[in-house]
Length: 72
Image (cartoon, rainbow, N blue to C red; front, side, top):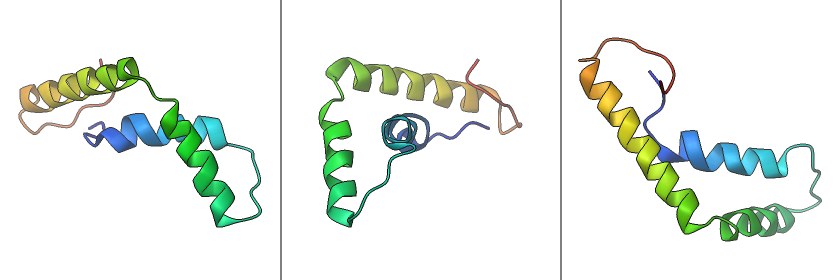
Protein backbone atom coordinates (compact mmCIF):
# COMPACT_ATOMS: atom_id res chain seq x y z
CA UNK A 1 0.00 0.00 0.00
CA UNK A 2 1.23 3.53 -0.59
CA UNK A 3 2.64 5.30 2.39
CA UNK A 4 0.08 7.19 4.42
CA UNK A 5 2.63 9.50 6.03
CA UNK A 6 2.62 12.94 4.34
CA UNK A 7 6.37 13.24 4.87
CA UNK A 8 6.92 10.08 2.82
CA UNK A 9 4.82 11.02 -0.21
CA UNK A 10 5.03 14.81 -0.11
CA UNK A 11 7.78 16.42 1.91
CA UNK A 12 10.74 14.05 1.49
CA UNK A 13 10.34 13.71 -2.30
CA UNK A 14 10.17 17.51 -2.68
CA UNK A 15 13.31 17.93 -0.61
CA UNK A 16 15.09 15.12 -2.45
CA UNK A 17 14.41 16.74 -5.83
CA UNK A 18 15.82 20.07 -4.66
CA UNK A 19 18.88 18.67 -2.88
CA UNK A 20 19.76 15.72 -5.15
CA UNK A 21 23.26 15.76 -6.58
CA UNK A 22 24.47 18.60 -4.38
CA UNK A 23 27.41 18.34 -2.02
CA UNK A 24 27.48 20.07 1.32
CA UNK A 25 30.54 20.77 3.41
CA UNK A 26 28.79 21.08 6.77
CA UNK A 27 25.64 20.02 8.55
CA UNK A 28 24.77 23.71 8.80
CA UNK A 29 24.76 23.98 4.99
CA UNK A 30 22.40 21.01 4.75
CA UNK A 31 20.14 22.57 7.36
CA UNK A 32 20.13 25.96 5.64
CA UNK A 33 19.36 24.51 2.20
CA UNK A 34 16.66 22.25 3.65
CA UNK A 35 15.09 25.24 5.39
CA UNK A 36 15.06 27.17 2.10
CA UNK A 37 13.20 24.28 0.43
CA UNK A 38 10.67 24.26 3.27
CA UNK A 39 10.27 28.04 3.15
CA UNK A 40 9.35 27.87 -0.55
CA UNK A 41 6.38 25.56 0.06
CA UNK A 42 3.10 27.36 -0.49
CA UNK A 43 -0.34 27.07 0.98
CA UNK A 44 -1.39 25.46 -2.31
CA UNK A 45 1.39 22.84 -1.92
CA UNK A 46 0.07 21.88 1.50
CA UNK A 47 -3.55 21.84 0.32
CA UNK A 48 -2.56 19.42 -2.44
CA UNK A 49 -0.67 17.31 0.07
CA UNK A 50 -3.65 16.94 2.36
CA UNK A 51 -6.02 16.24 -0.51
CA UNK A 52 -3.68 13.45 -1.65
CA UNK A 53 -3.46 12.23 1.94
CA UNK A 54 -7.25 12.02 2.14
CA UNK A 55 -7.38 10.08 -1.14
CA UNK A 56 -4.78 7.65 0.22
CA UNK A 57 -6.74 7.15 3.44
CA UNK A 58 -9.94 6.58 1.45
CA UNK A 59 -8.22 3.94 -0.69
CA UNK A 60 -6.81 2.28 2.40
CA UNK A 61 -10.24 2.15 4.04
CA UNK A 62 -11.94 0.88 0.89
CA UNK A 63 -9.32 -1.84 0.40
CA UNK A 64 -10.34 -3.29 3.79
CA UNK A 65 -6.76 -4.16 4.55
CA UNK A 66 -6.01 -5.75 1.19
CA UNK A 67 -2.79 -4.87 -0.57
CA UNK A 68 -2.88 -2.20 -3.28
CA UNK A 69 -0.35 -0.04 -5.09
CA UNK A 70 -0.30 3.53 -6.31
CA UNK A 71 -2.50 6.51 -5.75
CA UNK A 72 -5.06 5.74 -8.45
